[in-house]
Image (cartoon, rainbow, N blue to C red; front, top):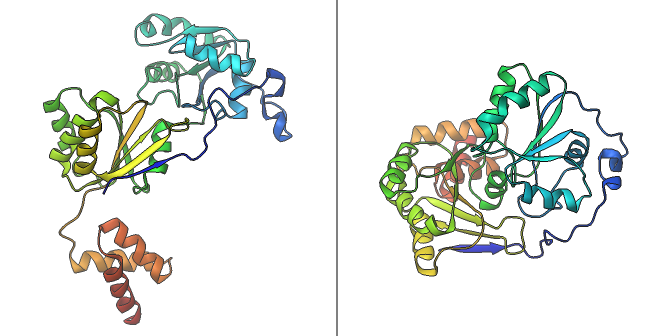
Length: 311
């Protein structure tokens, strides 16, 4: 069964009015951070402009220059918070040309920020080359954490979050996509992908063919925005749903649960339970093991009681 959940009352991304004078960690009763030279990798909102951190605003107001994938997108964020800072483009097409000068300036003491169109830079983003080369050149790189579509999708999915792997974008062609999925088949954790609406149904179908149609999955889209939605089901159910309803709008995070282990032995189960019982009550330990191994909670709980009784 495919389940969907929408955000009941998210704030509009545009519903934000702030000036530069009201930003910064001063609002938390602390002075703004004094910045040293280097590259500041700043996370920005993935939709709702209120999801900016106070520290990020301090940094963006203080640095000499902000590098952005698209200065028009970045300009909206700067305007919303009254930030007057030099914006310049940095992307795949000009990165190789710009990096030497940027690194040279930071070596000489410049403070430069890097942002992406949304979320955390370096995640499926051209900025990683700049960060890598800056570190190689002895330039300090400062992470300024914040919003991330990958983590927001994981939180909303209901899938296991103790082990997960971000796999970026799947290949655009079916054959390559199935091969890429096959290579990830044995990963013992939740798989996270970014995907586009037009390719979603085909990607779900290919994932079902390679990973198994019964694998639990979730499609999270428009996270933090007005029409935020998370739809859950098996890969086969989700593939059928989007094949019928057509491509959804918005930015999409596609998540696939861990492999279904159909050959759990009694020894495997007992070992997992004994380990969980070391630091958890019986019911909680049984629930965690059942979830991890894909087994009925009642059966696992009964076995946990037996192990507990046997000492």
